[in-house]
Amino acid sequence: MIKTILPALVLGLTAIASAALPAAPVHAEDQKPEQVHIRGSIVSYSGSALKVKTREGETVDVTLADGWKLASVANAAVTDIKPGDFVGIASLPSAGGGDGDGALEVLIFPPAMKGAGEGSYGWDLKPDSSMTNATVADAVKGVDGRTVTVSYHGKEKKIAIPDGTPVVTIAPATNDDLIPGAVVFIPAEKAASGPLAHQVLVGKNGVVPPM
Image (cartoon, rainbow, N blue to C red; front, side, top):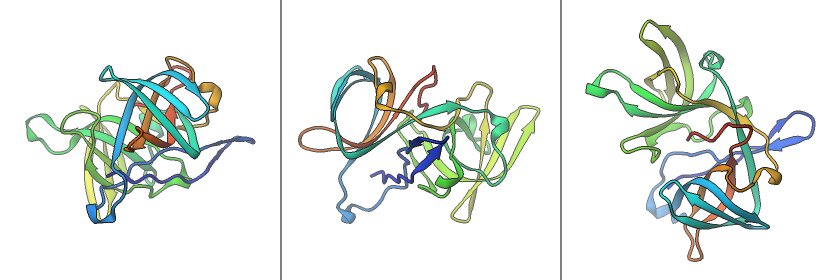
């Protein structure tokens, strides 16, 4: 399953945002609710109910748990990635089995979230993709693109970041951003009554959650 970590992140003087952070799967004996990732666009929002049309074309009714958290994402750049930063990178194995993976998206975590969900594990953005939450050891610009070396739990991984790869960071959001058509990423728990969400990541100002 995916464990979620929600440290508070203060942005500006009054805006407070928090985001759903994936962590490595845990063992079944921990008896935690099964998790599901919902990616799609909002159909409607009212109170504790969020209706979403998923990328698979299904319409899903998501129940928002008491105390649920909301955040958005803002554009960043590869040049914003510095040694010591904590990042979450979804990637695919390199074609032909070359050294290193190729990034599908990059999330630069605010300093307050460093260490959240550290590790590398399977992800469902695309078939065979993985998610790596790790600290940047070095960021190198090369002739054939940009490669970032990240470290987690004593291991290292090289990930190439091709031109055009979405790079984002966490930004604040309000319930007013939950409008029809807005793109969302929701890590939810499977429940008998349908998905139960403790956090929602919503797109705004033309930037959508790429993870």
